[in-house]
Length: 298
Image 1: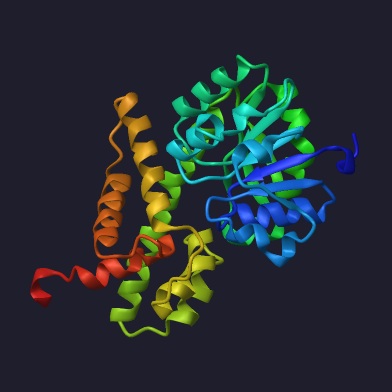
Image 2: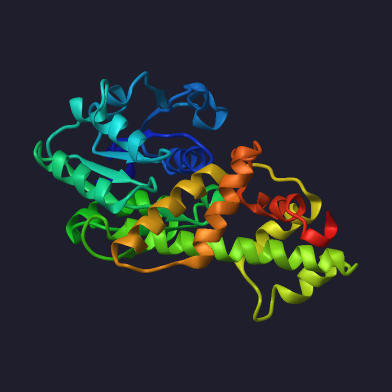
């Protein structure tokens, strides 16, 4: 099938979902779209796409339905709730779930869809809003190899690398590992920048010197400027990363593993959320260090 023959639906047009949908549209896929607020459906970059009132309408007549929604409850509502996609998904169609959810929820969704002969892969992504806009996300997939191959025209459009790790749920397990790394790297960058600023160092020059060495990271290269400026426009919502850490720490508990750094970052995020920062980018972890001075600074 050519791209023009492969009809797609997309549910979830948030910080990642919207640019993903734009790239699919630009690649020539006929596209039906839906998002909870309905506002993003009218984005000028989606001109020519069909806006839909419900997930069921979005899934009607599509070969592949792509999801990029916030959490387990949202996935279940979109697929199986009132007006959900399962009401209209055709036999033999495919759900590509790019949401970050628990592995058990992914497996349960796959089993329930299989009862109506609909296929499912979990395909969470990483790479930030920058990667979503550029179409260079890393896709972490779980599912049958043949099903993944059917999804490749979509995945090759939204991502530059597609990795298959095994059965449904394994992509979500790898995403949990990713989010533990994100937690540690963002927190480390926040602490390092705080120290440099307190020492009176020229921090832009310090970042430029360090980002190419052993301390280099995606967080240092892409989020240090926001931390230095104290301005945290939405890239990846703190509240969503907090949800992801809950999933990761739950997976660790299931295998009797203690993750002290991730646990501390989760507590920092919870504190920031209670102070009203949950809708900022996760790099606002830098705020926590200013809001929690050492005892000698009181």
